[in-house]
Image (cartoon, rainbow, N blue to C red):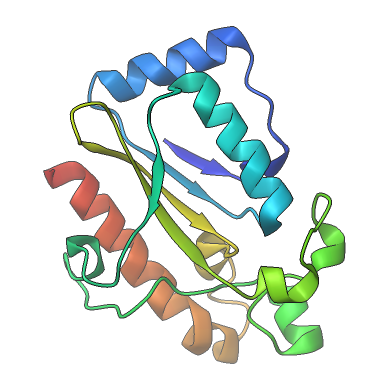
Amino acid sequence: IFMSDPGWQELDRDEQKGLKSYLDQGGFLWVDDFWGDAEWENFERNMRAVASKWNWFDIPPTHPIMTTVYPLKKCPQVTAIQFYSRNGVSYDPAWIHKRPNGGDADMAQVHFRGLCDDRGRLVAFATHNTDIADGWEREGDNEEFFQRFSIDAYALAINILTYAMSN
């Protein structure tokens, strides 16, 4: 499952149970395009309702996901093309997101996190303070955007999908 912009979501009981069942049966979740502490806290609260004992951890640069197919040193930060075109930065401005706690400085820090189940199986990745999917969606709109963002966005996506299907 690919989930986008979960910083605003509210999962009802049936959705919580369905997601837990899916993950328990070997499913995998990738969550992308949510920004700032408030959106992370909202998403994490929803996931605690799915599986209260599962905890998120930072994916280190040495994790196999970083080299499964393509070598990456870090999770890339990708912003929406309109913000890059206007401001030349790799992060979204704080004002467009849910109750931004730390302003632009909060948005500039990419978080690449994993979630393990009770057996230690990695069941989810979260790419927070980045919009990896915009690297795919906007790759043909602007050559500079493609070179700066899309190449690494595709590389990370291929790594994540390959890792998820083989582990």
